[in-house]
Image (tube, rainbow, N blue to C red):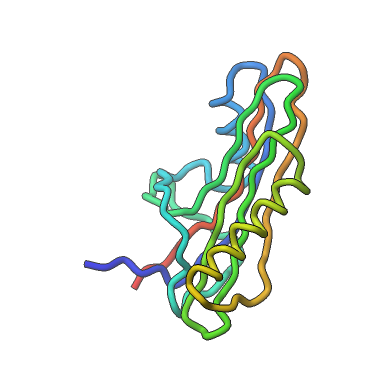
Amino acid sequence: MHLIPQKFFVCSGSSFSRISGLNAFDVALMKAGICEQNLVAVSSVIPVGAVQTEPEKIPMGAVTHCVLAQMRGTGGEKIAAGIAYAFRKDGRGGYVAEGHLHGSRDALRKDLELKMAEMARMREIELEDVNYVLEDGTVPDGEHGCCLAALVFTEYA
């Protein structure tokens, strides 16, 4: 049995918590709209024919495949997480790169640009315009933080 996603959406969120990094992660998932799912991390291939949709409500507890980037940090740290994604120019699907770092949104975008360029170079293909979903923030003193971004697959053939 092959599960081939027909649709996907992208989302992101960030949060801070005085309690723990897990609680910051949980609220970031809430802000992204994917906190009630059982997330399963997958690698970075967008299938041929898959189309991007608006974020959708997924039933509570559903096993949900996604490419997930997350970065956690503590007081005073600058954190960033994000994804880049693009379709191939030849129409044969696309790719997703995830990234996370202690640093700025600009540094993360540069990292993702390099990753996408390398993915194309290694495959000897050209990509359409690359899209970015980035979150960053500076964690307040005495708190924990989390930034995340995801490409969530839905509707399987």
